[in-house]
View (cartoon, rainbow, N blue to C red):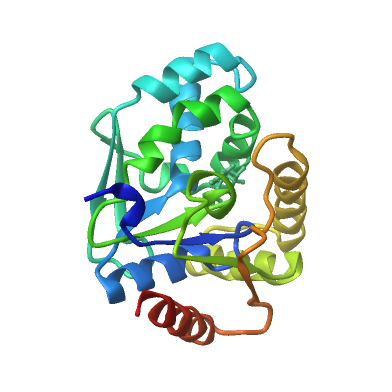
Length: 229
Ligand code: C5P
């Protein structure tokens, strides 16, 4: 089957907008594959750190991105439904730290690094369909997507959600520091020259500030069912 005719739903937006949770629920409900593209940039940052490569050394980072051995293994966990392995080591938690997110946004601003994982991302488009979560899924990687969602929320709401998640895990953090880190990452993602964070022209924007995950999911599922008919 021609890959372009395989359905794809893209869910782009800033960190903490609920993309990950919506993506995983939608994947389960529709029985579709999932691409967590942010995890790929997080993995490049982590692999570079392990290899002692600076986050600005583009050529070396391209080599890291092209050669890293990664595996995504589905697990039955509500919050973290994928186990992520790098060179056979479990890095599921390691790539979720705040630092890993900041490092990811630094390497993600390098054009050749983005190019190096373009094909890899494209290969996730397999039957019966794909839900792709990221920043440029609808604008760059899957411009022909069946449905494009841009999920956003105020920086304050996103910082509070993240704060609650970390406190629930007994990880002590300051809400103020989290807000600053989110704003710094937004700034870098929106203002970079290549594939900046923005809604595709044909995307449907949902602002999740003040909405529960159930409410956002219900909206996205209704849109998906309508488009997939
Ligand atoms: O979504 P997540 O928080 O895991 O993404 C981490 C970082 O990876 C983002 O801040 C962004 O800089 C980068 N990213 C990207 N393009 C994507 C997905 C993530 O540039 N499609």
